[in-house]
Every structure is written in structure tokens, then in C-alpha cells.
Length: 241
Image (cartoon, rainbow, N blue to C red; front, side, top):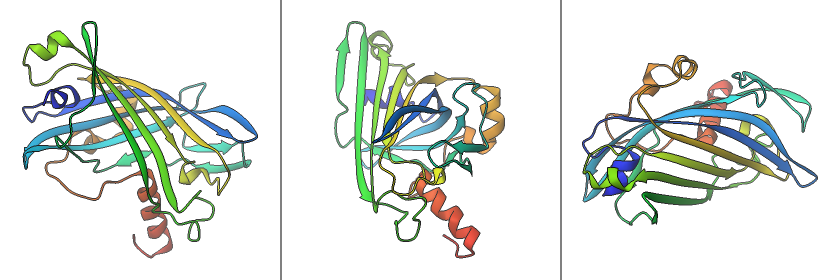
């Protein structure tokens, strides 16, 4: 499967994808607003299994001041005039099964583009009744839109790890830690990145060694910002989670 060579490496080696970009927000009566910068990494290992592939990954990302690009630990919410603690992304694991369906492909001159459009709608881990300040709806709805660009020459060479650059757009509800309640509106992430051999020092120091290596084996369920918030809230209340 050529896409595995673009997204990761078909020989089971670890690959690191780095991205940088911005997060915008809007409400029905205002916006869009430039709320955050955003940078992060995903470390992946591809493993053949059950006639397809397991993509074993974990990822971490940091929310930044949109002007200075410095890491934010607190955020002055312009919508609510409240200062909140920023909860950065530390998702472990973020695993996928690939191979059951072909990945859509477009040839553009000497470039090959793979696109994955993920439409999500499922029961939210944060029910409004339990988290009125942190949940917009009992159903989580979002879109994750990826494009991976690779050289046709690199693909034809047969190398297991094909260099690529990629774009990523995400449309989602307000983040739980923003404490936006049921206000209308939401977020758009607009990022670009590439496979890399080195991670920027600031990111490397903040995420730690654990997030610079892929998981050794499959596990579930995946962690998201919503499940991580629920688990953290459960620990704070003494109820686990």
C-alpha cells in the first residue's frame, strides 16, 4: 500500500511528522478570530496485521500565543473574559487501521496527493449535564481533512519511507478547557507539516521523550482532547476516569 510509505514507513521504522499552523474561532455574532498558534508532532510505526495495516501513533501539540508564538499556559478568553488553564495535546495512543479501503489519490504533474477526509459524529465523552461549562453538545461532531503530497519519483523508487509534506484542516467544537459552554460557533485549525528527522527544541523539551517514540503494540481506545479532559476532571473530583 503506497500510502503507508507516505504516511509512515512500510518497514516498521518510526517516522515523525511535525506540523505548525493556527487556530481560528467564530461565534454567530462575531469572528473569525485568530485565537492560537499551534505546533505539534505525531510519531508513527506501521505494522502489517490481519490483511491490512495498523498505524501505531501517539501525538503531542502545543497552543501558542498567535502573535508572539510563545507557548501558552493560561489563556484570557475574549468571549467570556475568564482566564483559563491551557490543556495542551498529549494523546496516547492515536491508532488507526488502514487497508480496508483505498485512499483517494490525485496525480498533479510530478506530485501524487493522497487525501483523507474524516467526518466524525459520535456520543461526546463530555455530556452537557455533567460538564455544562465544557461541552457544547452531547454529540461530538468534527471534520479532519488531510492531504499528503509526495513525489511520484520517490513513490516509484520503492523506498519504504517516502518523503512527504502535508496539510491538515480541522473543524471542531470549542475545546473543553476553553469553558465556552453551549455558545454557538467553534474552531478551525489550519496547519501544514512534513516528515522530519529533527523536532524543534522547544517542542522536544515540552513533550518529553515518551512522545518521541511510537507505541510498541496496538491498544485502545484512542485518547482525544475530550477524553483527556474527562479523565483529568475525574481525577480532580476523586472519581477516577
